[in-house]
Length: 203
Image 1: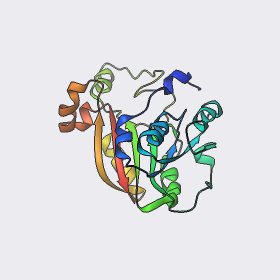
Image 2: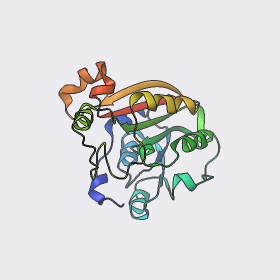
Image 3: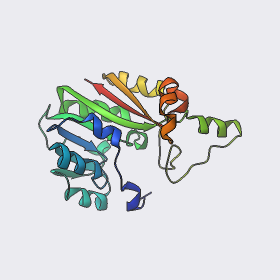
């Protein structure tokens, strides 16, 4: 299901903050390229993207150094040397894939030995989802944790397990909350109060 262009008209500030100046970045599922645009303008990064939606990819091409149009699950090769990127980003992408672990394994070859992956993934164990489950509700929506296009659902435990199985070591876990005033509490009870997890992991 294709979402409206306006759905992508923002970028993840937490992912942005993980990237250092002048790094080479691969943005998987880059949409129209808002994140990469900021990385290029403010941090002088080289940014490449992969995007399955041709309309969005054409917009990203105006902002990125290179954009590959295609499904990352069906791209056996990318036009970059091994160990080329300092960082590979999956911003709200892995939950949409049929086999995210295969992608995490496949993409590792393009990451420098001291490089890292960064991902944002919604928390299906978020308090409001749990409360609705107690009432027998698990209703899909156009966006958010129960986005109807999600194929996978993760808790913090299952997310950490997947990353570990793929041979990465988690070095940072950040939480995003629907309200700023929940941030401190969410850091204490990540599995319950985090709306979304942001993970940084190294090879």
